[in-house]
Image 1: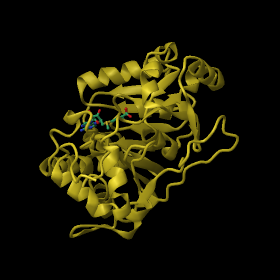
Image 2: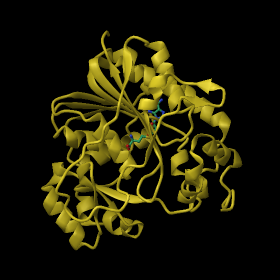
Image 3: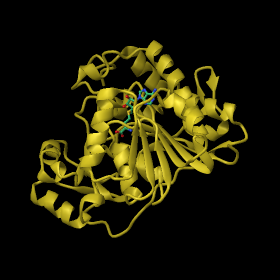
Image 4: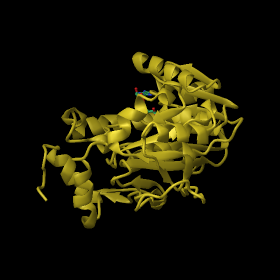
Length: 332
Ligand code: SAM
């Protein structure tokens, strides 16, 4: 295959090869040439999931189930418009959200009545998913500093029938110090370079990529993860996620937290739930394509435990994604 078929930054492709096994190079590079994969999540806060699912099918949307959730389905890219313009979507019964993004709330697994923080929340796809898993009980504090995105977040959650959310327009880096250890769960779906969303069908997705920006973003993420961790109660859990492949935005950020809180912070293994009696036929290769987090990148080494974190490898169903589940073992 052509080394750089459609103008993706050379340095980006070179780095990708440094941490992907050789047998995945071509398959992963090809995913950048495809239109983005599509998926929906059915919102049980707005109605009976079976009825909503049947309504979507009747509207012409082909739904393919996944093994780890009863309300998540991949759909053909060509059906994205039908799903997003459907009355069910207008009523907040259905939300277009990539499968990889949907894994975040599933892995963090909040309980009803928990106190949950979403530290980088707009436009609110994952916050809404957290609220659905909490059955709209407890408290969901949502932080977003960018005004236009903040209002979109509020509107999205309202549309999806969420009543447990509180909204804060502020820099997430200030939150941990301000609120202290009060949350059972925290999600940090960090602002990032978006490398895993690069698509040659949309050159603007990678037009401003640079190593300098990645280093800048990494510094911001290090401030945010510290704040998210400070906000946890003892026994609380933090999920750190990005849609970037860059080790500076992933393993380096998590390693910085382990260094800052060597006794208190522990990385947990990530398990995905599985379910039986799937309605419909499972897609071929429905297994989540994943690799362990890195222990080395160039000259930089990361603690052994970083291989408990996960890199979702893009394929025909999943976008690239990074997930790290961290526990606060004790203390304030
Ligand atoms: N979790 C969101 C969802 O599922 O819809 C997507 C979050 S997006 C990856 C990252 C968000 O972080 C953006 O909305 C961005 O504006 C916000 N952000 C940027 N700087 C921030 C900061 N200092 N504190 C908190 N959020 C920030």
